[in-house]
Length: 246
Image (cartoon, rainbow, N blue to C red; front, side, top):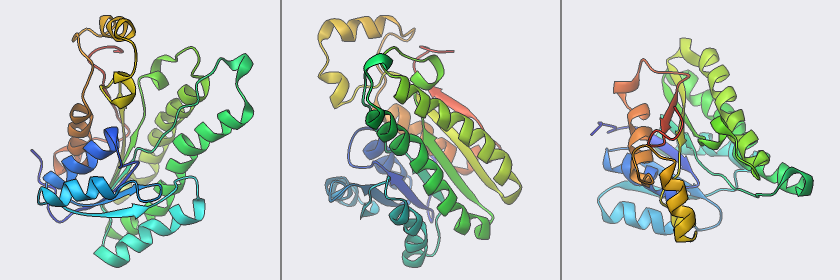
C-alpha cells in the first residue's frame, strides 16, 4: 500500500483494537514499530508482528506518566537512530451524565486522551526537528465532532485533540513535520461486540454506508497519513466513519 521502509514508528495503546491494527499495518508496510502499552500488554501484539515478518518491539509505557513519556522518544532514537512516526492512540472512557460525573473520571479521561498526546508530541518533536521530517497522528473520534450524551469528558478530550493538532501543525510545518487527526466513527471492536444486538442495529442505522467500521479501516488511514503520499497534508481531520458525520 505505502512504502514505510526505513521508518521508525511509535504507537501508543498498541495492545488491542485500533492501536494493535495500526501497529500491524505500519509494520506490514515496512516500518519498525515500537508498540507501547501498560505493563507487558503489547507483548502479544509484537509476537504477532514479528511472526508475520515485521520488525517490532514492545515498550511498557503508561501515557499518564509524563517522565516516562518524555524519555521514550529519546530512548527510541538511541536504539534505532531516528523516530519518524508517532501515533497517539491510547485512550480511555469513563462515561456518565455530567450531573453524576466524578471529578476523578473527568481528570483521568483528559489526562489519558489529551494531555498525554501533548506530552508525547512535545518529546517526539525534538528528534523530528533535527531530522526536519516527521509524522504526528492523533486518534480522535466522531464523538469529538458531534458530542454524545453521557460522554462529556470523552468528547471534550477528543475535540481537544483536534484543536491541539491543528495548532501544532501550524507550528511545525516549516520544519517538514506534519500533524493530523484520524477520527473514527463506530468501529467493530471487542467493546462494540459486547453491546446488545438492538443497540448495534440502532448504531448501524445512523451510518450511510450501513456497517460498522473495522480496525483495518482506521489503520489504513493512519498509514496513508504516515506515508510520503500524504506529505502535503497537515492540520487535517480524516474522518473514518462511514458517513456518520460529514
